[in-house]
Image (cartoon, rainbow, N blue to C red; front, side, top):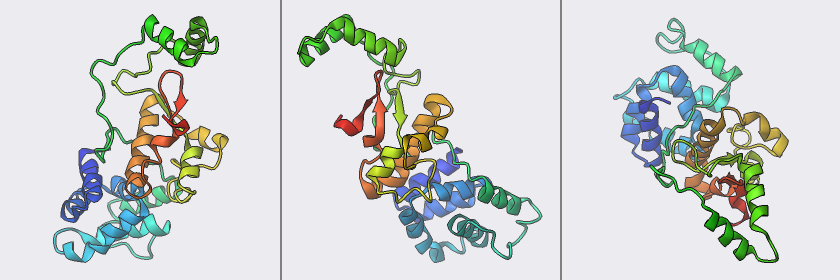
Length: 242
């Protein structure tokens, strides 16, 4: 995702409509379509309710064309300006057929902790403490064995200083009542199996899904995205109360 697209989404989240339209105007058609598609439909509606105030500042016919493609998922009958000649109608057609989402590399809502420059590592004392806390005859060796199997030697943090996560699409769908399934299928699926095809690209993908759901749902649904993560080196689900 380009810095301009990030600035667009940040401005929408902050209801800074002037900056939102100015940054949206600076995007190519590929990112313009996907940037608007990334938004919660309530946010997209709020953005569009302001469009009359900025008609003279941006190429609003082009933006409206992209908006109509995102909302209606078909090509408008006519394309304004040079959209046909410059291939932007083709970009819109490709989006309708293959609406691949943007990759979110950063937290655009400012609601998540910053990555750690030097993530802590577990020591044997930590495993002893965990065994004592669990009680019931739980052995330190057993906890270490589970950690080795689940984490494969990892310490719970990736190289970027962020916790290792798995974004569970089916839990997000359950937490949000399925309202994002039609508009954001890469974030919301009804079953674990249905969500599995979206887990490609390792932690870059998982964090992109996390950031994307945070941008879409958090302002309206609360932290539903945080409660659908398997977090850390043994993959504990935060929906279990963490």
